[in-house]
Each structure stands twice: as structure tokens, then as C-alpha cells.
Length: 358
Ligand code: BGC
Image (cartoon, rainbow, N blue to C red):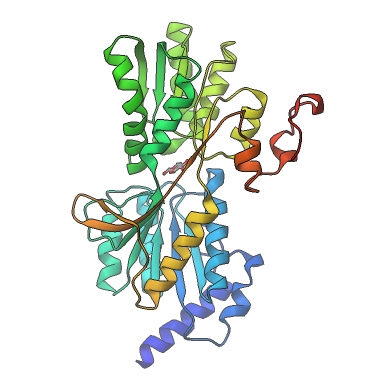
């Protein structure tokens, strides 16, 4: 018992000063330090992220931390910068520090199963955040309807061009979401491929969802073939790479999809350079996940709304809905929700061409 209290006291000390190696530090503006001082009973949640390269993850981390703190817990957030081995050792570190719950955005949804096992050996429950962890006794999963994300991506493109040479840039092979999104897109594309209306000229995944990789892949295709009629990209980062390649080949205006409704993507949608993105309300997933984490840290059962098969068990899960974003509804989606400001979204659009503010 004494050992546990000592461990917790050390952990709380670390929370107040820690900079976990090679990764995210505690956000000094969050007030975590003050909250934890002198309170050995405070709940501490470990939040292990795959990376912070894509804009959304910093927002996920910050919304999550804010909500957890509001609920009286503190958060140690770490980022593995797209390396599954680093993620595993960072998670081991959090487990050793005695966190009360572990929340993981898995870089590799298969490999992360060993983190779940190790957490369980230490009596810590695990929530897979946004990305499913496969083939293990995972405690909880929270995400969006990723199949619908893929359906919207294809729909947004098909609404503009419904036949011709299509390229598909699918995101990371180690991320289960890449497969769900692809399933969704191909629900719409496959019948047209089968009927011969669509010629699938490029169908690739992109290491780590990297923009540069998507750029290289599409550029290599265009160097050989000169043109393409549409590019279905699995997220905004890959879309950005694709758009750069298209513009270098004077193919601006070719429909391109993405997801995340990142600021860059919304600006390009406003400018007519990207066709569609998918808005996933990050505050909702982050706050819900924080509530779940605090509940399980207290030994309670977290609220879920369905079960998802991870290859080993039916994981109690909470899935949130998503919305399609196009030039026509930027105002009523991301801007109305306060996800991005009007000024930011229309920054590159001349004032005379901007829609009226509500
Ligand atoms: C997420 C996307 C994100 C991508 C790259 C996926 O798992 O669902 O929102 O763009 O990872 O980080």
C-alpha cells in the first residue's frame, strides 16, 4: 500500500514537471501542475498518440486534457512520432508510472495489442482512441463512423465527376481506419469500376498518412500518364499532397477528397482547390473519451453505444457521426460549429467572393 502511494506521489511529481522524452510535453497552459499538487488520490490518465504531424491530433490532445482536468483528473500525453516501437516503450513508461487508465491512438493497430496486454498485467484498462486495436482483449474503443467517412469521400468526388480515370490514395496500412475508409469509398466506387464507368488507375496506401508520400505517388503516376479525372484521398494530408502534384501538372480543378476538415483543407475548399472533406467533431470525441477514461479510472463502466469486433472480442464502443463538407456548406458546418473561424476559412478568398456572414 505504502509502495502504491509512493508510486503515485512520484507520478504526480512527474506530471507537474515531466517532459516525456521525444514527445509531447504536458501543456504548460493547462493548469495540470496546480491541480495535482499534494493530492495523491488524483486520477492520472496516460494519453499515447501516434503522432502530432496531422493538425487534428493536437486539438484532440488539448480537448481531451481540458475535459479530463474539468473532471478532476490530470493527463500525461505523449507522441510516438509515427513509430510503433517508440509508442510501446512510451506506453510501458506510463504503465510503470501507475496511470489509472490508458488511452491510445495506435500507430500500428496490430502491434499495439501488446500494450493492451501489458496494461492489463498492471491492472490498467485501455481505451483505443479513434483507431481500433486489433486481436486483443481491448476494454473500449471510441471513434467515428469511418465507413461513412469513406462513403462521403467518394460521394463528394462522384457528385462532380462520375466516370473516367480515378486514383485512390488510401492512408496508412498500419491503421485500421484506412481499411474502414477504403471499404466506405469502394461501396460507391466498386459498382462503377465493375460497370466500366470508372477505370481505377492508381490504388495505393501511403506510409504514415504522409502528404509527401501521396505527392510522390500521384506525381509518379502523372509523369507516366499525364492526367487523371479524379483523386479520392483518404484524408486531408494526403489530399494536400495530391493537390500539389495535380497543380504541378496544371490539373487544378480535378475533384479531390479528404477527411478531417483541417483548416488547410477548408481553405482549399473555399478556394475551389479541394472538393470535399469530412468533418469529425473532435471536441465531441475527445470529451467523450475523457469521460470514459475518468469513469474506468474510478472503476466504473464507461458508456458505450455499440460493439465492434476487433478480431478477438466484441469491444464495447462509442461511435460518433460525421458530416460531409463542401464549398456549399462550409458556413453551416465547420464555421457554424466554431470548429474554424470565418476569417480563417476565407483568408485566401477575395472579400467580394466570400459568402455573407450569418
Ligand atoms: C484518422 C484521421 C487522420 C489519419 C492520419 C486516421 O486514423 O481517422 O482523422 O487524418 O489517421 O493521422
